Length: 105
Image 1 (cartoon, rainbow, N blue to C red):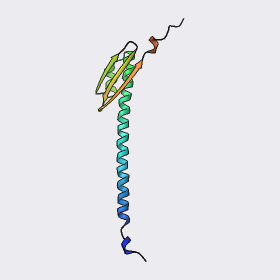
Image 2 (image 1 turned 90 degrees about the vertical axis):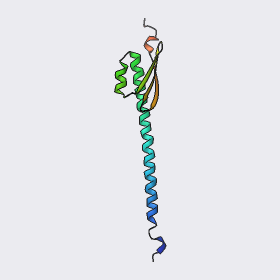
Image 3 (image 1 turned 180 degrees about the horizontal axis):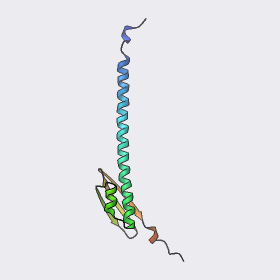
Image 4 (image 1 turned 60 degrees about the horizontal axis):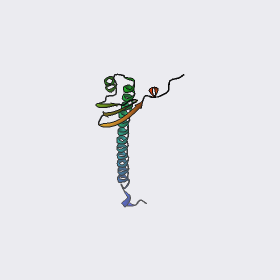
């Protein structure tokens, strides 16, 4: 015989489980989107640092990576770059080791 008080009690449990899974999916999607945005900004900063080191056209590189704004600081053997892309700031540096090595004899 069936208990009359158990009728329909699975519906709220299923609704709660679906809500929890949906909320967890939204949180994971947000975290992944943030990580992708951060990684793209860092990749752009790395590319600009290397391009600045070899003397390439930085405006073309910045346009290729959709960089909003960038700053380049040249040192004697080092380049430091700050990039803003989609509201994320990333920094990178590159060292020109060719100029610091002793010439071969």
